[in-house]
Image (cartoon, rainbow, N blue to C red; front, side):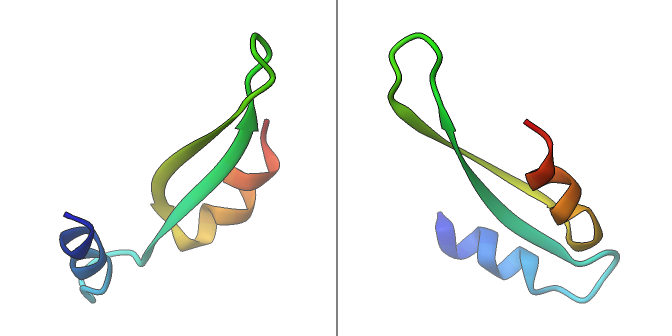
Length: 51
């Protein structure tokens, strides 16, 4: 399944996209969780800056 995601990110049609993984801490348990999303490359810094 990961191969399909990588293959679609390498297409040259439309905008370029990046897969971003953010580590967040759960306020309830204190454990870390990982949030994955695919965003356009020009919005990566904005995505990582917001909490």
